[in-house]
Length: 385
Image (cartoon, rainbow, N blue to C red; front, side, top):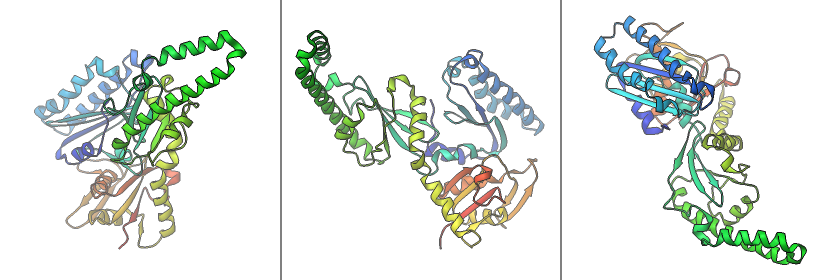
């Protein structure tokens, strides 16, 4: 799975003054749709529409072939279509091609301009969205790094023992079987011995988890992201006892991790971490409400875009299912707005989002009903002077 990070986003934002094609499609991970290659068919249909539109725009045959070749190769890559997530984002231009398989439920959308359409993916890097998931079993330990919209494996084989036997010795499984057998055959006579074996087992698991904690700490301290643990309920108190990492989330992702794939763990973890991940957005929305109708907020596109250009925007709020078409002249800071997409205009939301992100600001896609100022599709919280 190709995840997207800040460097990828920067690379996309730096492609300009070329014919740029952005394609977003929803995809299915498994089931009948995958067997019937509906994801592949969907892209094929959208690419046909895009190529016809490029011809209408008088794009040369040479450029059209360069843009289309990697897309057509992807359409015919049967192995690729067997491993999908919830959404596929494609960015193609002359001598440029990138694709990202992401756990984001994109709406089908295409965009042709002299820049890529990055609005649907900007929330991936907005706010306090990054975190780690530790999938913990006595037979297997895995670490993932995730955002609200993405998840990927972290290689930790050199950092931690992969299973309890590796930490306490290979006689662990044999002793466990002996203890179970002895407990069932000796009944009540073995109750005290059984309690002792339970304590021994807990001590062994605690030593194993302490080794995991020690091995992970150096890696986790680099970015100090929140760590949420996915394990069975009886194991969580033992790991809490072993844990020394400060940014540890004291609520477990319940259930046996082996019963879920990586995406299932991601979904369960999001339910627990939602308050943490929404923290920055909620704080900025509250600040906008407190300062609304002052010089520290804006709801007019003609005011916001010049402020973006001047680096004055701290946080940009964009209505997620809407678009604002037009042009912005950076020389005289003049904004022209049109009702729909036309030759020569572009998404003003996309332009503003790119510039705010480039300056280190926040960008949030907000449902219409939750916009801070519902009278506008674009709101801004300005930097304090």
